[in-house]
Length: 328
Length: 282
Image (cartoon, one colour):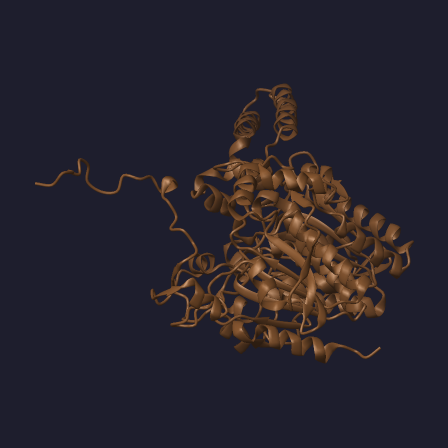
């Protein structure tokens, strides 16, 4: 098990429990009562820690090395799934995966960012940072979904679109922009869920949808807290403050009306009970698709565009106030 | 012996108290370091008369360059708001106040409607001096309203980008402006109203990755920095030097993301040509 820094009390309790178990296995002393007590303590401590998570702690959880990724969820949710590869222009991006699958009788096109589960795979997946061909593959699959009238599911989990020379040469910006433009007009339902990190253009490049939700311990922001710290504070040391200032948690996003729903995670985070998490996610996706299928494509597109058109906070000043402004 | 003696060595004035040289008479080129008068500069379409460097100019300079004469400013009543109470080294509301005072502008984008070679055009142009031309809720909303206006009046739209990208102090709200503007543009495209995207130095980040790359025609000023990630970020990521000419207008033209590059002196006539070519006889 991997414990995060704020889980130290939990880690100590786990160690104690292990010791007790060893003692009781080796000897004749019955430790079951003590172990039970300790387990209760673990449960309470976990509840306490997890009910007061800071923004930065949620960022840490979203990056937990044992957290489930897109392919795990796909295989848990779909009885049948065929992965599809390539953007048909350049190559197959490994940081965005996708294919056609079946969720309880409903065929869907399901895609998302993919991170690696070990050091070698993390490199292979480019740490979930897609190149333009990843976004173009995603668009190809979405267009296919539209032709065959399959709903689209996008799972978001990226530290950002890849900032590299080749990515710029092949038009990272154009690829993301094109997806936003096309997703706005896609005739089939689009359900998006942030399952881990939702960083910037890399996230929203597959994140424009009819229903956008976030798992409880994830974040969504215009920039990762570390980069924000380095730019605005001119130092990498203010990531905690940046995480707070950016108001990037699911609770904030829901309060701002930017996302539609928060998906509860099992106590201790998605990684502590991945199968349960997959079941919760599947229920959410099924419910969302069914709701959206009640609408006609035209209604969906109109509602989708209106939803985004309404995001923004600003003041409207009257003519007299404008004059005052220039005088002051 | 002199009458005055310098008591302390070096420059004592703090950077924040430094007096900017008054604008108005002389201009020293950032690139070739040659000096020219502002009059010469104006006569040369705000480019360096010695090396043709296209200096960074403001929204109203572009309005003056493009429009036949009068133009009307639109949606000037929208103001940014420090909704998140964002504070880094200084609070966002203070940054906004300072930017407004410094630039006498209300935001990093201004929208105007006027005529270019006698044809109507809506122009939305950015000011880099206003918090790096960054995109927040107001920029998104002004663009959205400009698109609505273009739709209602069936007038072509031109957006002149000059920006570092999204405005971090508006966090997810600024990110969502990418989706908002792109979604609105998809409506404009559906209605078959032309949209010209003009990219100037610099155009990076969330703006490039949304409306700036979505023009029916994408074109740029010479030698502008255009990209998704900034060069510094790329350099830090790949840990090697960037090739010469990387992320310039010429680089983007070569890689197929721009239709053409236009010198500032030809801007008006080129936009006029486009308007004439796209104009459909009723």
